[in-house]
Image 1 (spheres, rainbow, N blue to C red):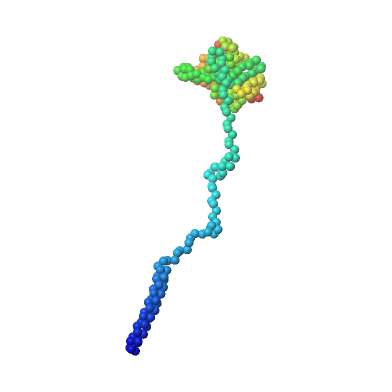
Image 2 (cartoon, rainbow, N blue to C red):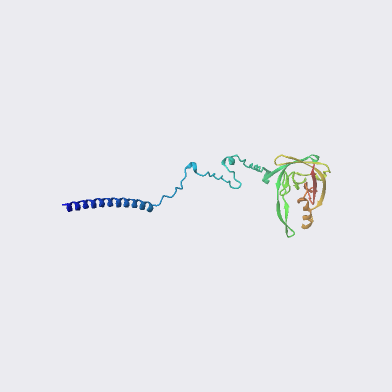
Length: 252
């Protein structure tokens, strides 16, 4: 009887001890799993995001204008555009009977000999003389010719005008050979601006019967002389036209 009692007590003790051991092992296993899980899962890295209030201040770079351009549309709008060039006046053409139209260049008056004529532009023709070609100035009736390419009226250089003497034509520059030093010549350009010249000298040179080389030397009076002058040219004498009368005047 006592033996059975002792055996029963021993079995109970074994059961109690087994239960306690199982619980201890369970707690240990649970603790070991948690640690392993924490070790297996690395801690999250510190976040790189910052709050707007803590964001470092960065200045917005200014726009750099291109060279020569305004930095803003406002400055571009305020820029003053360059002035427009003045339009070139349209040339005026006048008709001289059956000779056709000529470009109007102005007007000439010589009070001492009663000349009062319009000026029109004339050019030259290439004419063969002595086996060579030479430039021969055109002539016109009813006006005084302004030589194309000569200095503008009132401008620096040699301004050349030519016209007929009395004879078969009307004699637009008749009598210029009688002009004396100090006589006045009045000119107006195509825009109506007035200019005044004073006769300095006059001369008569032979033209007919000369070689081409000699006539070319005579033509020096029609070329640019590098100074400011007015040159008048006409034929002489009446009906034969063997000579040229040349009058030179200066601004006065």
